[in-house]
Every structure is written in C-alpha cells, then in structure tokens.
Image (cartoon, rainbow, N blue to C red; front, top):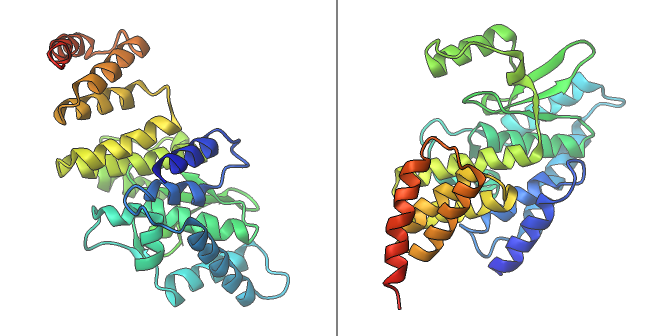
Length: 277
C-alpha cells in the first residue's frame, strides 16, 4: 500500500499546477500516519461541504456574498477554528484530522478553505506569508487577503505588518513579495516542513524520516532535504542509506557552508559501511 501511495503522490507531484489536486496530495501525505486512510471519502466530504455552502448562497451571489456565506458556514455553523490550545499537535498538519476534529493551523485550514472555495468557483490562492499561511482572492481593485485561522477575516496591510512584528519582533520588514501566490507544490512542502520541525523537536526520527521522504518525492533536487534525510538515517544507524544521501547532497551543493563537516561525516560513514558484512 505504501508503494502505491508513493506512486500516486509522485504522479500528482509531476502534474501541472492547474491539474494538481491539492486536497488529494495532502491526504496522501497523511497516509504515513494513517495507513488505512480512505482518501476518496475525505474528498467527498469536501464536496459535501461545498454543496452545503452552495445551498446557502443567495441567487446570483457575487464574490462578497460567497465569501461571507463560506465563512459563516465553515467557521460558525461547522465550527472549524485554529488550535490555540496545542498548536504543535501533529494532527493539526493532517487534512483528515482537520476535517474530523475541526481544528488546525493556518496552512491546513487554508487548504480546507481553498478546496471548498475552489468547488464554489472561487479563484483562491495560497499565500506563504512568513510564519502564518494566508489566502487571497482577486477583488475588484486590490487582492483581498483572508486568514482562515481566524475565521476567514480580511487582513489589511496594517494587520499584516503587526502580524510580522508579533512573530519576529521587528526583525523582518514587510515586503510585497510576501503576498505572492504559492504554488500547490510549495504549499505541500511548507506543510511537510512544519511536520518535520515538530517531529525533530520530539526526536522522533522515524516519523521525521517519513516526512522527508515525501519532501524528496515532491522535490527530488532539494539538496537540503537529502542532507536532512541522510542525517536522520545516520541517527537511526542506517549507515549505507545515510552515506548515499550525504554524497548526493554534496553533488548537488558542493559549495555548501557545511560541506567540510559533511565530508568528514561521509568519511566516518564509509568506515561504518565497510564494517557491515
């Protein structure tokens, strides 16, 4: 089953931006944690949420009416909200758990919001804002920036600047590029990177390794992910796999800042591998 999931995720990763099914990819990623996950059942649940919103829309609803109705349904009637009690709970990073528990973090609630909105014809885009994922939609004039973590509220430029200050203490200044739309692949990579950080904090190398495997599927040319996977393999005493990944890392990034340190580790790993019979 795992190999089929890998194949399905790899196939999605190689489709075009327009063709990629973001929700399906997010649910496939969750199958590491939930091997028996019924991906199609959760996709149908998203369909049903969108149908319920559609049924509540006034005749000839415009953008504003649709957004108001979407927010009312998801965040008031259904009760989806940000998990302020246990933000770093890994379940908040899995779309199936967000649908089941109605709790999530900015990026997973944004995926939910975009996927229900897409089924309603809303041209929503993900925004990989530093420290807090957002969503935007083209309005009559400027883009409208929305925060699904906070009930789909509209976020103005002043609020964005305050958000940055709260997150980084004035060390990061606002830049218009922060509001550029993220590709679906970039969204998935950010979601997985969140999970990687959580698992590494917990010293859960096996789950961290599974996450980095998915990152490599999405971006096989990522030197950083190959290095991280190699380091995790080394911690798990999988010396041959660690050696292969770290060698690949230096092939991709020979001038990396940590190249000397990694070369030393490669030498140590080569000795370990030589002792394996």
